[in-house]
Length: 272
Image (tube, rainbow, N blue to C red; front, side, top):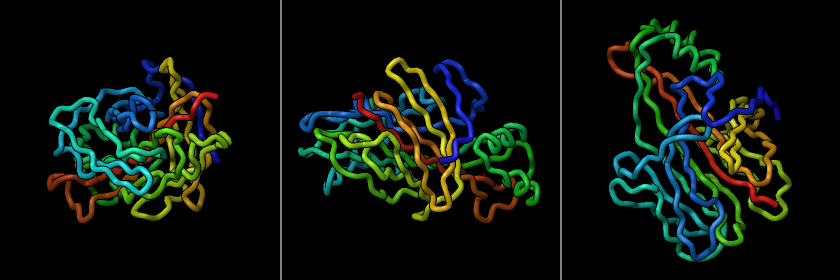
């Protein structure tokens, strides 16, 4: 594991994180539930593992489902439901995987400096040179973005393993953080279009019950894997972003020239 930097913050302090770099994640009300209990979870958008709860709107989702063992459950709701996930399970213990992909949305960069700050924060070293080489305007240009989120929840004994869910970009946990023999290091793979993402930045957010958050940054190795030390009693959010030029984009006036794909995964480590 290559830890790039580490900082400790309170939820109201935004050290060095651009205000436009919003994360999106699934946040269960409880990360461990009894086998016969419903599962409720929020969709959240914000910064530093703190953000507003988003209601359920069907048109905002391109995929929303849960997997428990061999059973796949489509997540459906009523317009405006909050929490967005209100799921009754079919019974049985195991590791519940919630997967969500959001419909595309867009943002406009009015100032070049904000785009440059974003590329530096997310460590896209060639984005500025690509933009300049294509002679795109440096003001009022558009980016389209999509969100690709997972959450791991222990149901009953919580036994089981994470698996590829076929999201355009996604994290895959190689261990079960709820397992009795979990050793305190979560090995993960970061995928993009079904292939490992080598040398990619992952932001790791760890939150206590008192809502205190620490942030660390790690990088994947040549096989797209990273090892993340975690602590009992904390909840975690992993976040990684793909930035790519929009295919066939020619001028800023014709539409978005950049696209971001945001991967996230949440889980908890039970207190001992």
